[in-house]
Image (cartoon, rainbow, N blue to C red; front, side):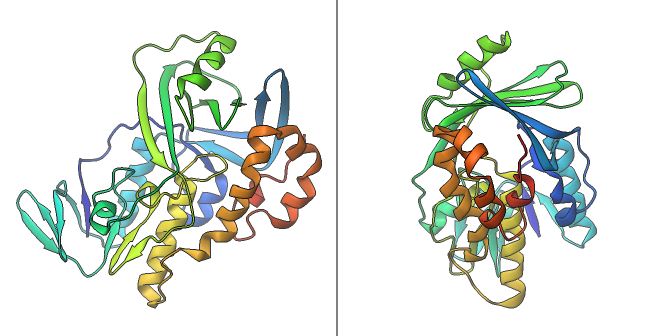
Amino acid sequence: MILERSRFPRYKVCAGGVPSLLFDLVGNFPYERKFDQILLKKGRREWRLNLARPILTVKREEFDTFLLDRARGAGCEIRFEPAQKIDGDRVVVESGSYEFRYLIGADGAGSLVRKAMGLEFHRWVRTIEFEISGRGDELIVRIGPGPGYAWFWPKKETIAFGAGGFGDPNFWLEPFAEELGLRPEGKGYRYRYPIWEKKERIRGRMILIGDAGGFASPLTGAGIYTGILSALAAGRMILTGRWDPFFRSLYPELIPASQLAPFLYHSPGLLIDFVRPSISRNFGRQKGYYRILRLKA
């Protein structure tokens, strides 16, 4: 059974960038745009990179509804009741409570399940994002200065424009907005979430996935792809009974991303020009980023 806080489809501001290899994992999901290139900028330098596999942009209300429908089609019962607390082996809702055999916390950065488990994460990213009207023709990422970046991710009729990092996200957003001649209206959508670190994510029969488990990539800060990988890993553990409290099966995805992050944020040219052979050999042997980032400048 799935407990959801609100009914679908529901609007969510999100950059919505996912690798096309997600088709291999979840099926033919709806998407907005497909891009074979990404424009990477740092200071006055820029690199136009060809991707080995396209990046797609999605609308979260459509993508999330697709996933919910997949779960319902597989026989999962869906109930729209916000959880209030975890009491032993029961999830308490307004109308009563549900006993669980396994409880998977997929309840975001402020996870109620994580709090019940008594776990904390220490590497948190702060972001701000706007969804603005218009059409763009390329993905743009502006790196730095320091550990953060800003993004311009087009969809069909809107553009996800935002920034994030270890600090005030306006530090990266405002120079990029000025560079592009954009004046986003309103206060924007702010979100704070943990990125991946080596840490326990299972206690007893409670398991954390997605942002609740801090699975966002330490390289890009993106969380949809790695969140889905964490969900699949949790499902395998329950089916096989082979518990992996640290999700070590995902280390081939996440450790190389952590190792490459300093290059991306401090010397992207070095990463692109000199580290490419290492990426091809070592980066993401399991499924993922390796198949995207075999770059050609």
